[in-house]
Image (cartoon, rainbow, N blue to C red; front, side, top):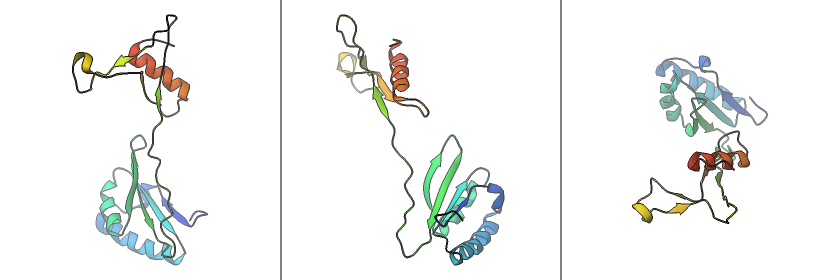
Length: 154
């Protein structure tokens, strides 16, 4: 149990393999954790035990988030009946950037959308840009996006 009275299960070897075994294991564990004062239970489901999420759902666990690169789904259960669920939501925003490039003639570099509805000159024009990748600074993201979309290096 952590300092917030939360139980975190991220080792799949701790979980039974069959749905029946896991149901029994989870029933007993939930009773124990509640007796010990646990406020929340979080289980990181990873292959090959993702089929056990159905059982967790039957016990009231909800899907919190999934993470593609780390290959897991987090399911949570708030057990403190005195207080509303206080588990913070998973960050669900991205940082978008756009680059404005002006040459010596004071011409502005724009791109025309390829995937937009419309044809020819009806397609919208915009500044090159996109999302900042994980681990990039905003400056690095702008430079990469401008280069990717135009071939121009700033």
